[in-house]
Image 1 (cartoon, rainbow, N blue to C red):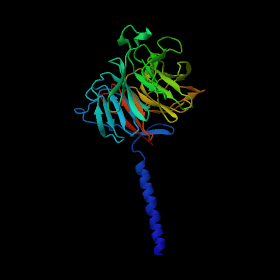
Image 2 (tube, one colour):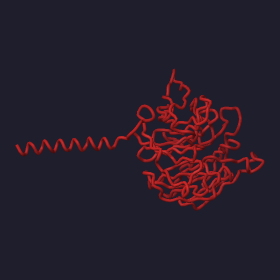
Image 3 (cartoon, rainbow, N blue to C red):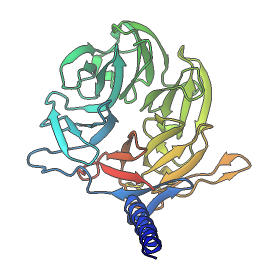
Image 4 (cartoon, one colour):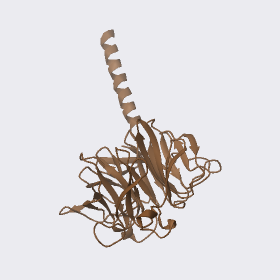
Length: 341
């Protein structure tokens, strides 16, 4: 009887332990998003003392190989803030980027680097993770596309496996420039115009290898879409996202994530959300947005549904599948974290 009682008590304790553990593991509070991509929001994540570590616009974020979350802001008291995944500040650096905008992580010979675009200085920089500038790219005047350097307003970079990189002039003349690993200009495509191959607010760019052969995804924010090009600049596909002024595309495993700065169909400011697409580029979830609806295979206009964001500018996806959202012109708020439900 004693042995039987012991086994029964042990079983009850074990079940209680796993139930408690499971309850602790689940995010608390309301969930945002749709289908299997739902998240709990922590809008206090990463908050710091603004007198010591201020932010202005929180533009973009990446995660490095050590698991650290790196934030780029155009606040020159500390352009780069480096957090752990719990939101603790680990270090900071950078005073020379008043127009800090695009942040891309690249790996070269087993070592990681950052590419930073500055819309005020009209330049792109390759740096070490602790801020040493290794390369500076100026306005490509040699192309004949620019009358003055101020017309070059780069917003994003994407780095290929061979070390060559692409720069999107998203606030300038709307071209995408391809450079070799040493910074030599190879080619360009896009530019302003009315043809499908042209771009308007080419805000973001990234390499997409989800289906094998690498291609280039470029934001066409004014037209509410992403455009896929091959690495030689030939247009392959248009991914329409009606109702979504999307920022840069972010690839994590089989999904594409993007901050939506605003929803133009609402006709008001502070109407952003976050959208998530599957491997076939079908929207499966909108965080803070309306549920994705397809009619006869065509995505219907999307809009903000819950006012949890003002102007989200970027999404970082960590190795656990959790999200970090940086916001532009949103009252100098620090990034929010979204834990996968």
